[in-house]
Length: 500
Image (cartoon, rainbow, N blue to C red; front, side, top):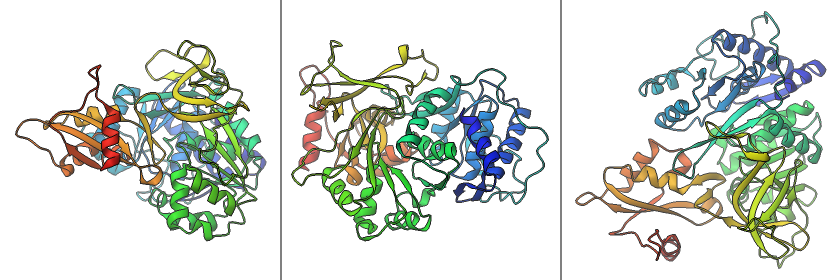
């Protein structure tokens, strides 16, 4: 399924541009041949149906080619955060046990310190291959056939997210669950071959599933936003213009950055026809401004944790001047049934709140190394209000998981890392601010005679966590406030943070 999209497009229009990235531009014919060559090499390294291939590469056409090569062998790829510390990557690799981990030479050396081996594929002719595409490819010896058995519900990729126990969890998606989203999205976005999709999200973030596979499904092109441009306000606006993007998809924080500091609200974007956002709540004021500035663009608010890729969608039309609440997250899409459920399992009615539960084809297979989900049903932990028209209004998280600038963060994971520092006895974290101003505040109880500094704790976090999970501010307390149940009183900490 996913493995066939590039090949089908290559047969139809081999000279059409498939991917544009920091390392060059690849047509469908080129990408198809390159994926075959890399697949042969992966097979020679022992990769076969059911195996995993880790990809620790910068966002690039090369990384896309490795993904395609992996899928052609009936194996699953696992994209890893290129900016994550080696210690964290080694921990993830130990969890999903790849047959091959693809990384550039410098990353191989970093991982060796933790006893983790990585492979540099030979599908590039010289030492510059991580910066640009090869000028030519060796002739493909044999066409690489997909797995001899049906792969539709086989594992396609694993996306790691923060875990509620302080441990990362690998979200497993099959070809079927991904295709349930991709096929719906292509139709909803009216995708066509002359579209030019942006890719703002990193490959280990589930938003990238839309950016890669929707254009591939219709023979359109995807334009990879370089990592160094991802949060450059003026750089993103210029990227939008220079690449004549027709479909943009990102977290609201990126769009607000472009509005606030990149001049987006003063810029005409004639090529753009569809704008999607997901990953966090878009504050109603900035969204109203953007909607008014781009009145002829189709806006859609998407909602869904990585476990479902996307669960609901809501078309954003004109926003009234007196609206205070964010726009709804909408109703079920991708063939999913999405309901708000009371703690006793009964469905919430209009005017009532409940936990969002998703049942349907885009739900994950399960977490890597754990039992599969039952009946393709996933309880999200998010609370929603059921509106009179049946749409869902997002209310908040049931637990301590939060979103900071669109990145999914489990505060308990940060706390577990902080508490592993020799100078920290206890730790609790909260998020202050919202949107692009959101930041992580830590409250720590130091070990007697040891008060670790902010720099010291930041350095410690950087060794274990992705960059977006590193604390921004640290306060020292003699004790953490607790409620009547003996649990840390996070509301009191949040109030203290807001007042400071």
